[in-house]
Length: 68
Image (cartoon, rainbow, N blue to C red; front, side, top):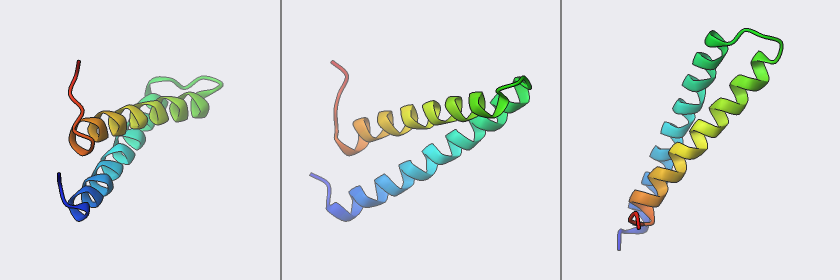
């Protein structure tokens, strides 16, 4: 079992990475699609990408879950 300080640092690092994924996906999305709902589409894609990145990293490295 990892010490609590290490887990807290992992959570913080993964949150920062997920935020970067979110912002980068929003940028790419708004560059590729410039239609009527550009902002909403970019926000949805960025949020989804950030959530998936955070979930995968937390599951694998913080909670030590293995794929079944």
